[in-house]
Length: 371
Image (cartoon, rainbow, N blue to C red):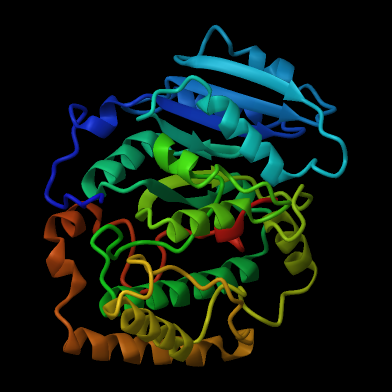
């Protein structure tokens, strides 16, 4: 069983820093983005990838040629593969599944597999912070945050940013309530609740044990998280691991971020993100989990529900937010602060996430970013 090591000081001599690092990137008509994507990986401060696989699939533009133009200038082994799928399996889940499977060929058993998107630019410390999360919490996977590129964020109307900020603030409160009721040593607060393919890192052994990325048309990133959860692999939602993505309005995945953005620009949804639930529903779910856990009837890892929660009207969100604040205040009085369990962790990351709101604007439905 993996055990977190809160008080370890991540250093390049730590085992996770010594492992082979391979990045798999599915790409479909990404000629405008693939060069900045690769340059962001090449300019990492600290550890860099040993190998990057670009899985160019069903593409009509010159994504492949532009990627190959960097072959001799990037500080890692660059492998560009082109494939054409028939219409039925030509979807994001299949492409990411195959990209990671190809990347893992011949990889050591203790390798670390990363994946991001071809329209994404990882933060300069993306790999460093990911390795620190592996080391500090000794987990099997690390999920990072997907934020909008600053220039791309300007495409989104201000009122949509404001609405999303409110959703993210409410989500943060739900996560804090969960952390108070069911503190998890491997994933303490501050943390986020995203499961985006734009920033996933996983041990080779855990990836192999769950059968890789699920081959489904949309939501393969979220499904992969559930597969890890179902197999009792601990996962860290690291708030300081960040990737910046485009704000495209035409995407590949039905129900993905691009489709959501395009719909909301025309008319805002009446309901907030369907992954968010009421405070009562969250507390009830945690209590049920803890009750089952006490008698050995469930896994040791609490995760979001596989069932869709009752939708929350956007107009009613302020009331739900106020109730969450009251509940959190009560729990703070009842329980010892979770922060006391990991003082060193909070000292390191105290600037990464506030107590009730995210530190950066997030793209709508970032936790299910597949478009």
